[in-house]
Image 1 (tube, rainbow, N blue to C red):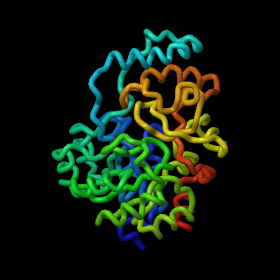
Image 2 (spheres, rainbow, N blue to C red):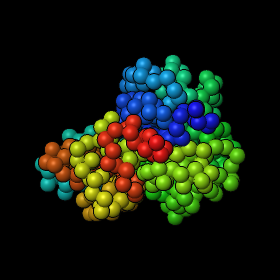
Image 3 (cartoon, one colour):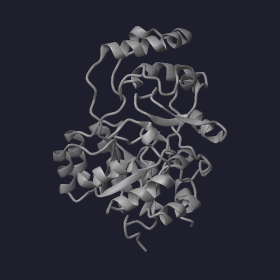
Image 4 (cartoon, one colour):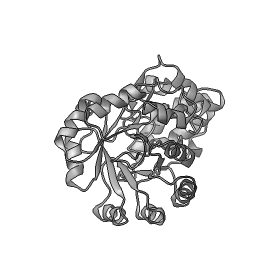
Length: 342
């Protein structure tokens, strides 16, 4: 029996997680009866096409491709210099010449070139983070029949999404790992937890609402469905699966259930939830010294590589939601079924 909303057997969506997964995880979830997702933010057009070819070859049911829709910031030499000055002691400690560290953006927004690749494959769902793409790009996605989904972290964002052409709203609670999807306001004081946010969004819009954030087992799924969610999106629990590309160091951090998480700007320039590490403790997780998203990443890359070679996660973005209790299932297929109570 197909789930009426998703067109899948189970009301479970694997969250797109840039940097720690490719098509293999998404395909496994699809085969298990859920909806797999492929993150597009860290692929170029050629890389995206390769992953989509693998996904299409492996699955028959619906799947999701996700993109960021941020506006790349104007070059800011002063902000970049300030950031590198804050990192200078770490460069010295690890023997890195800062003059040889290139700049650049760690993540790409949705572009016409990406839309052109997608048109070849016509995914059933294209989802966005940080709002919606420009109207002409949105129309292009809808022209081949795709549903457009996007994240809302407040009721106001959910209403805005409905008014501007979204077909589905993803209610992202404060517990969620990775980047906050907020786009109308940067005031983190407006953010709320999933189980408080979800019913308010359900009441405020006429669109289907997907719950996301802090859901790691069948109990959480049932709670979200009881509050009006049409389906549930799960990310953190999938990080421990064999089909994910989560590093051994990241996996070890996820297993330490006592380690706290915080929102931090340090790794990309935009608030994202991860396990607290040395950089967050010493610089302050929300330090304004990190330059605008997504330009903070480049200066950290050599520090991350050098520390990880020594078995340290001092400069690694250990993305994680607040609930890591589901990170003990090595099989993405088994996890998908367990989340649905199967």
